[in-house]
Length: 296
View 1 (cartoon, one colour):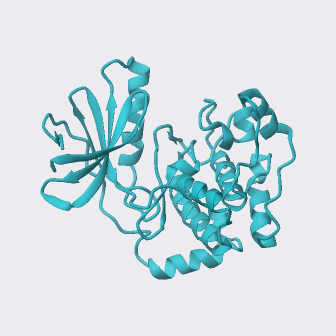
View 2 (cartoon, rainbow, N blue to C red):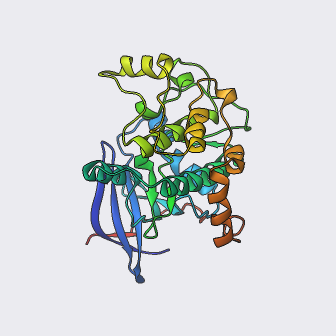
């Protein structure tokens, strides 16, 4: 098993930290290590924490999903090793565009949405509901390719039509059915991706409010805003379709892949990556270690 050397802290939260780490046997290889303190957690919280490693371990390498390498216990911490996205995340790119006062080109928006949809279609085919799609969880490679990440609250469903009822996710991207406390399934991810499409075009989220109750009411009741008219009618209609309040009327990821204006981007991606959607090695099994991390 590789030994990792910490390079720098890249994020932190109430229970964990994320480090950029280097493989000591090959210093050209950089990864992200999520280090989550499980020592003070009760049984349910610990189970939820191990969920991300469980979900990631079911996935084969995919070009548009952050690649998982391994997980293990180290000094009362769960360590999850994943690829490092050198290009940052979509949220940072949106902030940059806001500061510059310039909109994203439609071609770039379509490329990112196409890549996100391919990744989401793979997850949904695996019966995995992400439940927290947002710009901060869509990462970019050095080549500006999008990869879906952060599966901390993802849910593995028994079947594509199975539903869940836990209210969870980031408020601005919650679907109406979640806001109303109803059961929800894969279409909730499509709503979230529709919100991201709107935000890429408008540089703001589709629904605003001063507090959580107001936001829930806005998502549940207010008219869905239209994307700026500078974008094509086809792309604007796709956003409207994805933000349909009736989950049964939202397109599935598989349907979006076949829809104009995304299909053209999908065809470009497939021509460049003819073998990357079906090949790959199985993820490494979780292991225990007490000496896998070294301080910088």
